[in-house]
Image 1 (tube, one colour):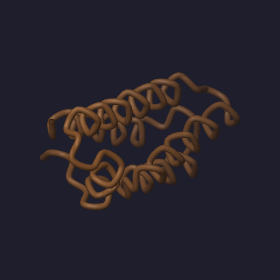
Image 2 (spheres, helix red, strand yellow):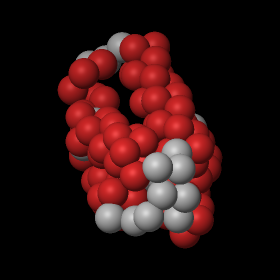
Image 3 (cartoon, helix red, strand yellow):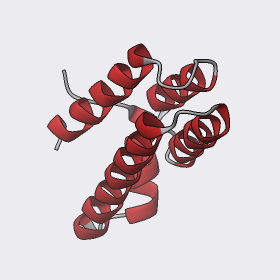
Image 4 (tube, helix red, strand yellow):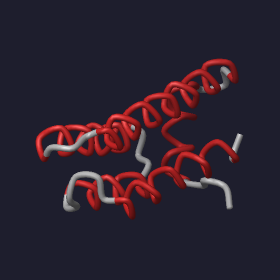
Length: 101
């Protein structure tokens, strides 16, 4: 199943207009940022680093109106550092997002 989110698509469309190259660039920047923050989250072992990485994911998701990712980020905020369940869910989000290209 690929990542689909109407609000996310509308946000990209509003930012990029009819510029397909800009649309692709914004989408890729979002993907790279999410991937980087998920990696940081996966390496966080203390509460502080875990919360900061999860909050960054939530902020990134909010700025692009990616509601499914916001929910996952909130779940991470409420989880213990290194929680394998939320890390798998976030990795799954990245895979679904990649397959939507």
